[in-house]
Amino acid sequence: MGRIRTTFVKTTGVKIYEKNKGKFSRDFSKNKKAVDEIAQINSKKLRNVISGYIINLVKKQQK
Image (cartoon, rainbow, N blue to C red; front, side):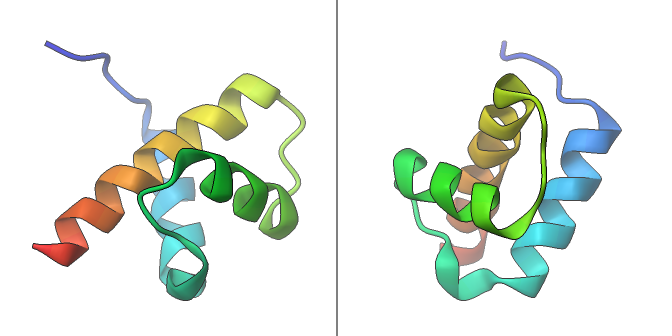
């Protein structure tokens, strides 16, 4: 079983992904940089969690 993500992470991740689908891929480091450019997130840990959630969104989109 994995970790449970908060609704803030999910809603923020979906909003960022929907507006900028072309910038994201399955690569975590590229997603971190893209999230940094798009949104002002003060916490490095929160940025990383959102980037990881966006990877799941990309995988779902590709199926």
